[in-house]
Image (tube, rainbow, N blue to C red):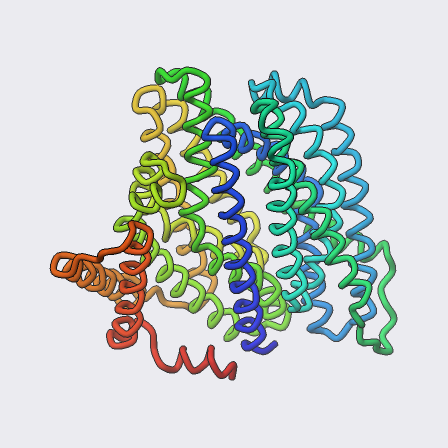
Length: 508
């Protein structure tokens, strides 16, 4: 398996993710202006339920499809590819239809007893309709990722965001005057419409995708089912426990904020600002790390199947290096410009305050995702599961113990503690099972010094050169100067080498 396929796939996914995230932010900004912080809080409350359903019928099967397709392609067993996708889609569709009816008939119970928010009942019923489309779509996306054809999923994600924005724009005048219940439902209708368009896109692409034929007879459907189950069942079980704990975490935050002294509306609004405004901005740079992660699983799986240790070591080393680098750069960007971004993007000073606090999480959040993908590709799912459970236990403990005393700050401390510990544990396990060396100087010290030098130069220029433009333009210019100074300093310091740049540009 060629390294260039990882680079090409990552570039395609990164570009599409940048477009998708930009469209997604346009949607969030427009939505937050329409429905406010409390409306965003209601909108975000529905997602734990959605993620539980997604985990049951999609996450493990998606991983299994991506992994098996990559392995069968590496062995030139093209006859198995169609059978893998047909079997997985049948399982996912069956599970998703059951979950859809469970949600529709129990929406009121879930909203009132579990979420403690009756205004989400209608949104849950509408959201349930999207689950079968999402389930089958995830299988087909896994198929394309396994083949190293990320263009199709990339296009589908862009079309999904465009559809969401269009639907919300068209429905806003009709739904917003009816109150937050209908405003939240409007946002969910946009999500459902986007999922359906994305599903149709990948389905058409799958039907048109030619498969190379060889003389090897395909395996029976029962054997394929056993292979999918062997991968999907433990992953789904592990992720379901993780998702349930994550859901408990998110549902508890508004409740514990009320113990701190907020009323119900203030608690939902604060929750909406954190999860619907601040965290999406912090996670924006994951367009790079998530693209790497999606391409890593099939790459590492195929390398592991072929016992290609050099490819595993190369992939792991470069991934850790660039993830840490992106995380450090993001930390300095949000520390320096976070308060301004909160005002510029959402016109909320509190968002800016949260951004400057959450900035310290960036390297650890990004590492947890990419290192988890590598460990999953190396069949170390139990290690990922155990480490994630440790992290979630820490966060839930902080929610219970510290939010009633310190408010949202207590939860933010828990986030930092959790991500630091989980990322450290993942790094330790990767060093043990691979031959990589954690290069403290090149991966940590030099990037930090370079970022400090770049920020200092920007600050110096601002002291002696007052920019006569608007806050938005001035901030964009300062951020651009930071990046333009940063890149040559990274090269001059040896943090990034010309060999690495040539490798990416020429795809050797």
